[in-house]
Every structure is written in C-alpha cells, then in structure tokens.
Length: 353
Ligand code: KG4
Ligand code: ZN
Image (cartoon, rainbow, N blue to C red; front, top):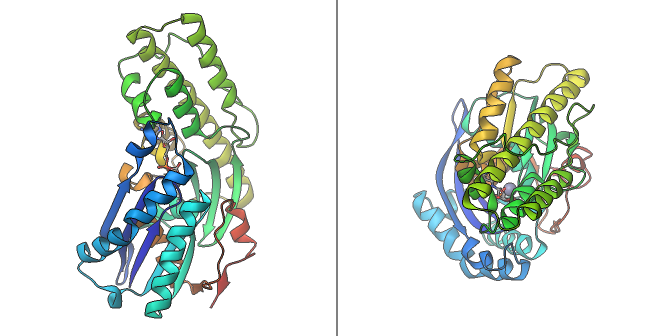
C-alpha cells in the first residue's frame, strides 16, 4: 500500500511517498522531498505567513512530481492521497490541502486529512515497531505538549505549554543573542562550547504536579541577564546558550516524568516514550530523555532528526495508518489553523468509511 503525503503547514514545502510492509510493522520511505523556505524568512527573523503561502504555490506541483519520480511510481500506483490539514498557517495549509484534493478528485483516489501533530506523534511507528499505547512529547516552533497516544485517532493531552512553545523559546533567545533564524540549531551548536553552570536560569514548573510547561519566565530571565551584560562577548553568548539549554532540558525531563506518571495512573504502563517536532532534533534533549527512560525502564523511540522536523513522509505515514483503519475524508474538509489533538478523539470531524 502506498500513500502520497503533502506538508505545507509552516515553512517547509514537502511531498513524499511511503509504503507499508507486507506482514510486518513499520514502513518504507520511497521518497521524501523537502524544500525549506528558511532563506526567504531569515531576513525577517521569523516565518512571514504570506511569503510562506506564495512560496508553497511556487514549488508544490514540481515537488509532488519529483516525489513520485524518485519513488519510481506514478499516480495510478498510489492508494491514497494525504495532506496536513492543520494546525498551521492558514494560507499554507490551504495550498497543500487543495493540491491533495485536486489530485484525489482527478484520480478518484481516497483523500485523507492529517493532523500535523498526529503525524509527528505517529512517526515513531514508521521507523520502529511500537505498539499502542505510548506517550509522545511534541516539541516544535508552535507546539509543546505531552500526549497519550492510545491508538490511531485516539489521543489524550497530558500537558501542554501555558505560554511559549519550546522552539519559540529557542528562537527568541537566539534572536536576543543576535543569532539567525531558526535559533534552535544555533543555540545547540554554541552551547557545546559554553559553560552551562555559569548562569543559574529558572526552571519553571519543576517538581509541580501534572505535565504542563511554562517557558516565558525562563526567556525573560535570559533577557535580563543579556541586558546586564551590555554587549555580550563571544564566550558570554556561548555560556548563555549552554545555561539556557541546560534549563530547558531540565524542564522538559521533569515535565515528561510528570506526563509518564499521569499516563500510568490513567491507563497503566506505556509501551514507550516517543519524540517529534523540530526541537526533538536537539542532541542534549535526546540524551537527557534517553537517560530518563533508561532509569525508568521505559523504551525510548526517537526518530532520526530529519523525520522530527517537518517533512512529507510523516504526513504520508499518518495518512497510511488512518487509511488502513478505514478513515476517509470528504473533499469538503476545511483547513484547520487550530486543531487540538484531543478533538480527533471526540470524532468531531473525521468520518470512518
Ligand atoms: O517542527 P518544526 O520543524 O516546525 C514547526 O512546526 O514549528 O520545528 C521548528 C522549530 C524551530 O523553533 C527551531 O528553532 C527548532 O524547531 N529546532 C531546534 C533544533 N532544530 C530545530 N531547537 C533546538 N535544537 C535543535 N537542534
Ligand atoms: Zn512540525
């Protein structure tokens, strides 16, 4: 079974073909074409929605053709067409969704609307044999949440950020330090040469019950430290990056611990912890979570960094998982700029054929 997946919710235009394995778990990525728009947004220090939407239009059709060609298939070999229908920037979502609907209409193939967060949460099952239920940590530029993944289409939020997303915190701190967008990878690189103990930044929510995050206080503390320094030297910048990253790692580990506890109380032991979203590419976060899981005897599944950031394969895989369980969507499916994962569980929109 092969599914074409289209992703246009933020600043990556992406198309991919993914297949399942006969009689085995996991899937194969036959092609995964990603075109990042970072260069077009970097001058503005963040994603500009109108530029993003126009850039998606410019390249999406060619990218789909390339994804099919590199997978050595043509449209008639595809079983279903999936697109991320949200959450994300409305202009971009509209373009990917409309392209997918157009292809579905022209070919008579089934159309599947995928929740972008659901795609990050299910990616672990593409790369590793992993049974439900499990805990997913989703950390990106726009989202930070812990979710109980009970089954395809059955999700319960365990906790989420009450202010900034983790990626947003990385990006804002990077901006304060005069580093280019996106800031996460820059901070990670500089942190390797910095002293993580030089600045004792706050760890908001540490030790609190539940699994919610708060990151804006940490960001403010970093801003105050930078103001105190006046013009930070190169070493100051590295030490701030290292100290900030250490604080966010501590917060994430503590909140994940809380999420696992909540999960266990509600539904017993999870089969593992998975991570997804751009921030999940961060090596310090991955190492800390590896340790946490080793201590608690829990399996840790971390898809390779290229599959943690936005791409078409994760949409195609989520589409394939939904397709195999009989989910189909109407061509009238509207884009959803906001689309909490729990809303899928209530079955508010997704119809089973
Ligand atoms: O999932 P993603 O590619 O796009 C969104 O849906 O937001 O995530 C992008 C975010 C950006 O905030 C970026 O700074 C962050 O992920 N990021 C990182 C790293 N790589 C990307 N943050 C920390 N460390 C990294 N290595
Ligand atoms: Zn994402």
